[in-house]
Image (cartoon, one colour):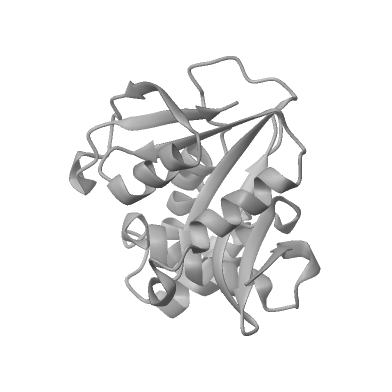
Length: 195
């Protein structure tokens, strides 16, 4: 296994990260299209590679996560890319909705300063589940020694991730009831901090 900054990988990195992203979180985006190829083309532009880290096995990206600090965002949208693949109305709608949910810095229930890193979008390829990829990514992030604290958000229904984060030293600080995720079976977003 190799831990690497996404920006240091080859020209297909953005598309490969997008595939992992959609594999992990794609159910939330089927409102825009059920065609995976179209979603990959439309979403590949959003990832700011300087904030992403990947796990590589045999030249294949099998895991990813983003690490940002206060004031930065790992996602940037281009409305015209969505319009190009989804059409004017659906593309504009996608841009509005995604800007609201993906481009706003999370409102963490604790004060975030420049010594706290926010971990986002932890995802592992389904082919490589239960092989320690997420642990490897998180340990790689910690080994960088960029921040004193790390914070993340996880759905209460994602028990494997919640248990992993606890094992890695994260402590639950609060649960917040989401407004619009009943459809996906999420009861609470759990905020966890590692100091």
